[in-house]
Image 1 (tube, rainbow, N blue to C red):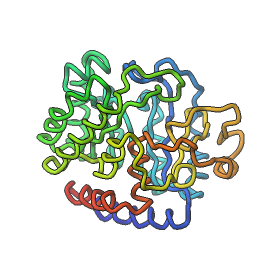
Image 2: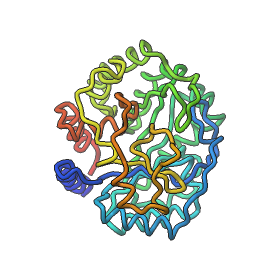
Image 3: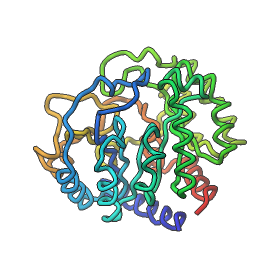
Length: 328
């Protein structure tokens, strides 16, 4: 049934591309986090959170505007006690809903998330490396979260950030995930900390990223659990120069902060006149958004979506392959 559902979702995506209509929303429902990862700024970032009723009302409006996918992020979204209710509400409207989490709280709460379409668990390297970056004990807890998801038939995927330190762990991490039949998706750490103008000292330089992505391309032919497409990896390895796609951020895709601020993508820095869903309304926010003037796509998930929307052959083949190699 999952394959049939994904095929239907893919057809809707194609129609959304043609109509330039909202399709996917990434919503950071909290800035609170129970970790303090070396490359992340969320632990020091404060922003008020919308309540359940406010979010539910906005989700209804976003669904009316075309939203079909909701990716719930943070901070650590599982710190919100009402998260299961938010997911239930979104899924009740037919929205394909996933969670991005560090996994620490998931095993004890897994029954509340049965039925969710996917869980992305952050693991950046093998145990010693991951614990150095994300905190002592975080690796074993993340793997326990993946095991709990699999036991309850919830699709789980590793979200791995490639830092200057963790790149040496790529092959081992891919093999480890492959042995446990877990897909893995890679995101290079960016030069600036997320939602900050501060330099990210864990950013890997261009040559290092090039070598890492070339390695992933060679591993992908053998280890089919690597989710990134060849086109996406080659784009990163080119130093963000080999752009063959159109950016659909602000039309098909958008990002929402805990207080309801709306940006085109997760790499957009807040501005004084940033649209806010509560203050301005969904329709006004969608009208005010503009395609980011960044000339480069550093967000791996948005990059893959942009490649698909642009009709990239390798991205399309990769999507079909990912559909059918996972259990329905």
